[in-house]
Each structure stands twice: as structure tokens, then as C-alpha cells.
Length: 413
Image 1 (cartoon, rainbow, N blue to C red):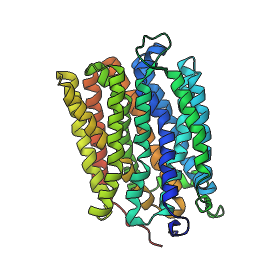
Image 2: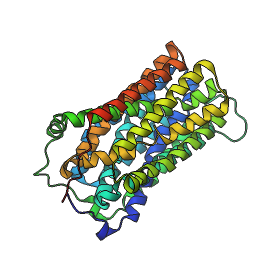
Image 3: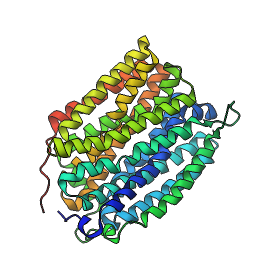
């Protein structure tokens, strides 16, 4: 394993840039999920068609995760982030001018493609800057950019209206929201140039295998495959939670769009605290054991999704639904730092980028299937069936991780 570069370049600036990179990258898709009710009205589309927006975003991540991870190993962290931001910028601009839902699908596909470069880049950056016994904490801190981006997206989405829609107070057309996000993304490009040159080191291309050979090596590891399948199930739940949170709040609990946007932001704020907390707890209280902690928080998520199913069927006070949403924000919305830390420690250092890409391919396959399955359940049945299905899939992931994967010792230098 290569020694951490923190002693040479410092870790504070890179970590701050990684947080901001996730913040900028997350605002894109999160804004779309917050504005699902508005976008549905604008395109006059059923839930299944609107859910397919997030599915196309996840398809973009799934098909590009391994190539992007391999790219990070070849061109370095800083260049990889530049590529990701350039694609995200183009996608946000395209979505703001999408006059039909087919163009919107293309834009979301591009968003997924762009963001799939940010995760392996920042995760490998953490690997280079931090020792093993602090890595989960650092992963959690840099992942706070995800919920912080969600907070901003929630506030912007809460103010969004469709063209021709009635509005009270200060508001924005949802297309204007996407233009604002594209501007923020453009400034994010400048963040990449703040990274030290040491984080743009590349692997020896003579030792690197092609994308397909890297994929073959990873796919031949049965235990690692079971691990990837469990992350697929967890992300199935996470994307269902965020994609339909505002719809759940407005349709089941009868909140207004602006209030739902605020609650969405609160949930993201909870996740911003929970992500680094779980990493800290793993490093300082559990001796860097991440699997057991991941099992606990995802099991709690199963209970909460089951509660959402009951609420949708039998009803409940609004405060109870909000409480369940907050707990899900601390659990199913906050497991990725533990997963990323386990991934970088499960393979040889020379294929960290590819392993992250392979894991994210699995995660985003779950994200592809989740909203589509949930949208179909809502169109054909109701919210009770949709959340019941989600609970069962996440439970399957818990069982698969618990009985099918053993944490490997960290590779020593």
C-alpha cells in the first residue's frame, strides 16, 4: 500500500475540496428528486415515467462506474474530478432546456455519468491522504457534502414551480433552479485546481490492466460479489427514500410542497451529521469494524420502511411520519461512507479505483431498479405496497452482507 500523502501535502485542503465536490455533484440529482411533484405536473407524466428520470441517472452511474474508476487510476484524482464536473455542467444545462421528458432522460443519464467519476476520485483521495485507522472518519466527513448538497437542493426545490403553475411568495421555475445549479457546477471546476499535484499521481500504466480485465478479476471474487449485491439492495432503499420523500410527505401526510422541501432539507441535515458520526464511531469505538455497524443501521432502516408501509395503509400523525423520515435520514441515507471504506480496504491498492467503480456499479444498479419498481407499485397499487417492497429488498441486503461477506484485513505496506 502506498503511504499516505498527508505528511507531504497536508490533509485539510484536500478533504475540504472533496466535501465541496460531493456538495456540487449531489445538488444535481437531489434537486430533481425534490421537484418530482413539479416535474410530474410539467411533463404530465405518470409516476413510473417520472421515476424513470432517477432510473436513467442511476443507469448513467452504473454503466460508467467501472470505466470511470479505472480512469481515476490512470489519470489521477484531480483530472478525474475535472472530467466529472464538466459532464455535470453539461447535463444541468441540457435539463434546464429539456422541453420533453425524453431529453430529460438524456440529461439525467449524463448526470449519472458525471457523478460516477466524483465518488472514486474522492475516495481514492482519502485513501492517499489518511492512514487506515482514520479512513472511515475521513470518508464520513467528505461524504457530508452529499447531504449538504441535499439541504440546498431541498430549499431550492421547495421554491420551485412549473411554468403556468400558481405560486405564492418568492419562487423559481424548476428550469431556473437547474440553471443556478449549472452555475455552481462551473465554479466547482475551480476547486479541482486547489488540489496538490501529489493527488494527480497515476498508476503505472504498464501494470494496469484494461477495464474488462479489471472487471474480470473483481467479478471472479465470489465474496466480493456478495458484498456488491448487498450494496445494491441498500441503494435500492436509499434511492426510493429520497426519490419519493416529497411525494410521500405531500400525498400521504398532506404537507404542502414548500413544507415538504423544508422537511427534505432537515432529513439531509441529519444525514450530514450521521455520515461522519458513523465513520467516527467505527474508527474510535469499534476498532475500525465497519460491517457490524452497517448491519445495525440498515436493519433500523428496514424497520422504518415497514413503518412507512403501515402509515400509508392505516394513517398516522404527521409528526410520526416526520420522525420516521428523520431516522431514515440517519440510517439508509448515511451508510455509504462505511461501504466506501470497506471497499478500498478489500482490494489491492493498485485497483482501488476499479473496485470502487465495480461497487458503485452494483449500488447504482439498485438505484436504477428501486425508483422504477417503486413508481410501478404506486401506479398499480399504493404507497403501502411500495414501501413494503423496499423493506424486503433492504432486508435481503442485510442478510447477504451479514452471512455472505467477511471484512478483510487492511493491506499492509
